[in-house]
Structure formats: C-alpha cells, structure tokens
Image (tube, rainbow, N blue to C red; front, side, top):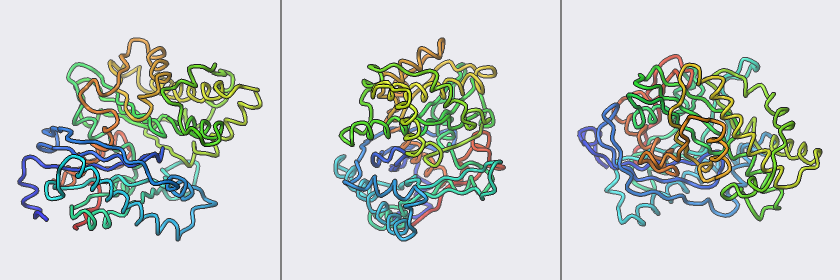
Length: 395
C-alpha cells in the first residue's frame, strides 16, 4: 500500500468508483484517471463495466428494504456479502482491462442503500441513512485503500445525504455562459442545476420523484418476472397514458415540497408501484397503457419540478441525462417535448459516459476526501456546513 504522502503527492491517480443504485440491477465499476483535485479536477475514464448481481441477490437486497422482511441478522450478513461482491467487481474490471491492484491508488464505494430516512417536518424520526457493502471487506480482498459511507457526514450536519453527485457535477460540467442541468434517472430521478458562471453556493439539486423504480416494478409484475424493465421504452410507446390518473398521483405531497429534498424506495417502492397498478386496473387500462401512465408520471414529475423550482430563476439551456432512463426512448422523447427550448441530450454528448457517470462521481468524491476537501454542497443537500465525506479503510 502506498503511504498517504505518496498518494497526496501524485498528480494523477487511478481510482475505482463503485456504485449500486435504487434499481438494484448490479454494481457499476469505473476505473478513472483523476488529475488534480477540487476545481482543478480532470477525469479520464479508462474502463467501465456493470456487473449484474448473482441470481437471487436483488431479491435479498430488496427484502432488507422492507420493514416486515428486513431482519437484523440478514442485514448484518448482507453488509459483508455485498462488500465481497463489490470486491469481486473490482477484480473483474481489473482483469478485463489488463490492470493490476497495484495500479490502483484508491477505491470510492457508494455501497447499496437499504434504507433512507431524510429529515421531514411531518415525522419525529431522527434523520438517518444506511448503506451496506462493508468497505473493510473491499479493502482487504482487493488490497486497495477504500473510502465509503459518504452520505452520513452530510446527514450528521443536517443534510439529506443526497444528492452527493452535485459536487462532482459542478467540477465537471460548470459553464460560463450556459445553465446546465444534470438529470440522473435511476430508480429515483434526481436533478442538479448549475447556473451559468455560478459558484458552489449557486448549485441547487433534489430528487424529483420516481425514475425507473415504479416502471420496473410494474413491468416485472405484468410479465410475471419474464421482463424487469421497459426496454427502450417500447411498451410505453405502444400505450396511452391516463392523464386523470397521473393528475391524482401528482397530488402526492413530495412533488410539491420545496428543495432540497430526497426520497427513495421507502416512499416510491414496490408498495407504491402496486397501488398505482391497482389504480390502473380499476380504470381498465391495458398492460402497455399502465406502463405508459407510469412512464408519463416520471416525465411529468421531472418537468413539473423544473417549472416550479428552476425555470423562473435559472432557465436550463442544456439538460444532460444519465442513468438507466437515458436508454428509455419514450422518456427522452417526452422530456424533449415538454421542455421546449431546453436541449435534452444524453450526457455522453458532453464526453462523460451516461452509464458510468455516478461511478465516476464516487471516484471523484474519494479523491476529494483523500485531499481533505469537502464533498457536499449545502445548497443541494440542506446541510448546515460543508463536510469532508466518507470513511477511510486501509487494506
């Protein structure tokens, strides 16, 4: 293992970013060459791969997320087992890229969120969040120093613990003349807005509501598990959305809550998706109409958020989209239609891989932590102060 001083004195570092999101579809691993830090950060993606979870693991993870099935012994075991799977993802991408553990300076791991309870004026619960994927296991099995558990420091300072990608977004995408939006459509959709020629303090961000989560759940239910998502949005394109149902769903208080705000499977997970499906059945919608209606809900919650909380002060010139939703042609088409003058593009057009973007972000956050730099933006997360994020584990 390189010493701290050796790592700090390196102008260029090879960092692996690891990410598994609310869609629970696998582990994203990105090998990133990072030059500099803070505002001088430059990145070069060397390799990227998504490693599907072994058969049955997504179901085991989802069981941890539910109050009636999330047993403490299962959470304890899965924390270490998922850490092992993250370590295996590191080994696989190193082998595939012809690199060795000795070539890597650092790992930044987001882990797998199993429960997220952000601050909420309507509940007495203490704000908290829990990600599993034990970093000590990752560090031991790979021999590479690992930084993980990034969200908790922001929440300790009164923030929502998300979106943490807003800081890397600012480092990579800030623009002197254009207001840039960074929309990630994973299980949950989140948006970062970078005003033209803005500062750290001018950045805003929030979760806008469900992304692919409800669509995926309904596709899985309708097809009895033979399909798990609407490939390219083809089913939604063949259906007709029921606007009266969408209008009912849009009354949900989260959609009208001012940013910063975050949400997750606790609010828009399987139970919510099945309630939506039951409502669709009550309206006697076809399978594809159901999927089209939930797809339009995702689109409208994103565009309504932009209209209500963004456009008046900072009209977005270009909206870069990443995450699984970027591959849903119906979502992309409808975003373009509803956002008018805003250019809606896959983030690949900027030179950053749409699929790898979040894994790259956690590689950057690990590099910032190594240098003692803060990695959260209070204007995005609601924290009282900027914080150095993550916990450092030696191999």
